[in-house]
Length: 433
Image (cartoon, rainbow, N blue to C red; front, side):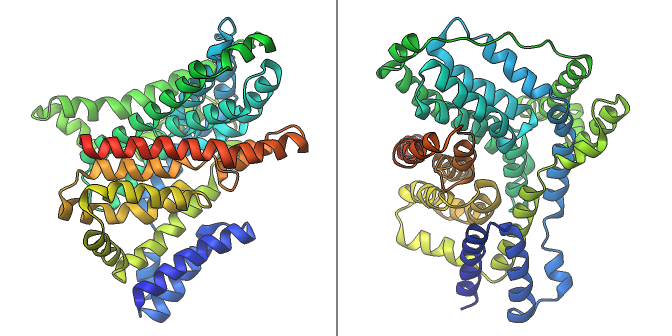
């Protein structure tokens, strides 16, 4: 009975958030308090302690540092330079859009920020060059998703935090997050290649004409921000990779054990402030507070569900009713269905990641396979106009007429294509690994 109540609360939080446009995390916090204290008999202190403080600190500190590159225009200027490089190869523009979006997201801009300034530019390029809106929309969406999944970027950090919060060792979480990143980069490249070389894309681009103006050079603060960002990525990624290569080296192991991405980002934020790379108040304002509240709020409600035994009950049901070989595929489908109306970062992964360790150990499945299937499935339908990614792309349309046409294309073509590619990949991954 208690498990049923928590499941209903999770569904209600998502539904109310979608209907009212109020942050789902706020509803989740309210339900966590009401159910935890008045139904389950927990103390208020116990419920407050369910706030994922470690995850909150990591997201806050990393996004704070990357905010400098957003506020002073470094990432937007970088995107202009990268797209300009593709001016002599118009039919390869989808690759340029995808890789540019991925690089900007990997450097810390995050999924929503990349879409905010890349989606309008992409749709404008579609209008000027004759490129299909489907190809343009999928390229920018795929790129923003894949890049943000990089191990030191926003989504990758959230995935790692959720894994470690559910009992996965730090080094294993790093490897799992690399598997997620690699998968969400490979699938888009295959899909985009089919679009570019199997249809009439090349002919349309040649007939449409193509011109991109030369971008302005980087300013001194932007060059310094770019260098500082690359340096932090090296500091964060090099020791874990070195430790994987040489696990018995005591010096490397000691250095790796003392690194914490949130603390490192805090140090680099202080350096950026001392260098006056951007206004501190604007950087603080640029933080994705809605996403942070949603992730942490849903995390509290999921913790209440774990306390009620809901997660164990769900894992037991899947073990008893679904053949082991199809569990990763099914959990990917569930993630895709949830992502049609809910955030991958704020709802889908916090809800599904906790059941992975139990399922993986009892069914002898590699946890990385299940983590990958969840993220790949969830992000496959993120281009749906009902989801956050698709709605941002729709909002970038210059006219109501273009928006109405794109709505149907995203819902009935882009989302099914993305889902089909994800299911095929998940199926292949299940049998290969």
